[in-house]
Image (cartoon, rainbow, N blue to C red):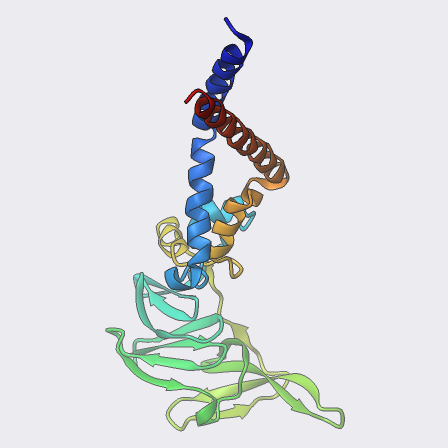
Length: 259
């Protein structure tokens, strides 16, 4: 057998195997490249990642969601939405600090950092009380002072405008918040860890640290998704692609010389 023919068969043999071996990587690079080229049209630059598997791959741990039990249900806040047993009721800006459930007055009250949210027993919104109605914000804590609802908020005063934590009693009927004596008793509301079924439900709404799908696609395209070894793996496949290009050209060139 002539040497050129034998060499050509070897090139064909390894060209085909290299192509099959690197096919998946080549397809992934093409698809991710197209996605990145049209990220604005696909909106992947705006969609945040909610997948627990992807978040875990980035070392982002799911938070332990906490809430307050309202009757037989649980109230919590996820991404500024107030949920009750999985149903969105309204927006709650900032963390949920506590819930006051009044069977006598037939309402329940959610205390958020920026507002008080008053709802009926069947979860219909009555009123949102915020800074526009004089509410001292941001609220840092909420609780009870004896039998009265109290909130603690940052107030500024003094010669150097020093920030101080002030306790206010809340009168919802008159919409008044009266500063209380510093020695007054204050028992803050407590939040509890949600049950496992509730944790699993709310995890699907969690978006971690502004991680977008564009970032994930970019990291897959550049092999950074696979850690420190990723760029070296990609370099290996780049060498295979170069070999395929060279062997393909050789096979075409030698075949064209025969005609």
